[in-house]
Image: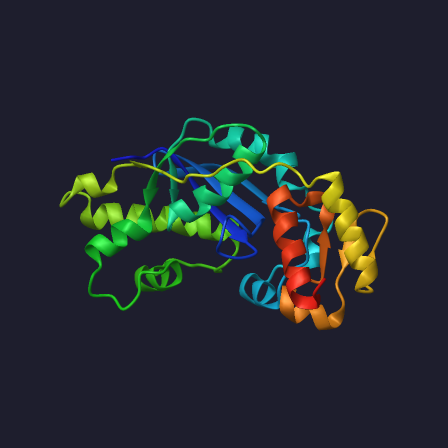
Length: 252
């Protein structure tokens, strides 16, 4: 039975690691089944938050305005994880966001992981749901859902409970599996793209502040989701997609 690992959970602006951003990281180091250390931080995504994200997570722009950007804390997080296995509920989701961030910093990140969602789907077939909140309620595990550190702790406690109940029946299901997510590095926004966005902002009467913050108008927020975007933090691909969305909305 695996007793040493790092339980990881991320809160994000959405579900797609190609277009969405990490806004909170929670991780705990487990030794012999007990919590030995923790890592927790908000992450500035370089953009405003959609209303549904704030409603789901309880996280606001005020929480994130002074938070570090992902590149500023990535080395600390990778060092915290070390050589440990990752554990989480649908751990591939969290791994995919983290791997994209690492690859964009020209580094590698290959891990094996234990997925409590996979284990629950294997053994708890009679339950109406296998999401983390439902399973915690089922087992009497306290959980303030959709906050990263709380969810990491809950995944750890759920794993321990599932081990007690099912490990001897099918030990292989509890073994770490290689986490696979293919991602290509995205370079930063180009000077030409910044210039183009500046011209579009002026043309469409948007506010582009000196520090590179593009403030969207009220009528645009419902379309784009965010209230603002820090264009300096866009990747080349993200900038291209955002320009295309602007042109699609307003025309050339």
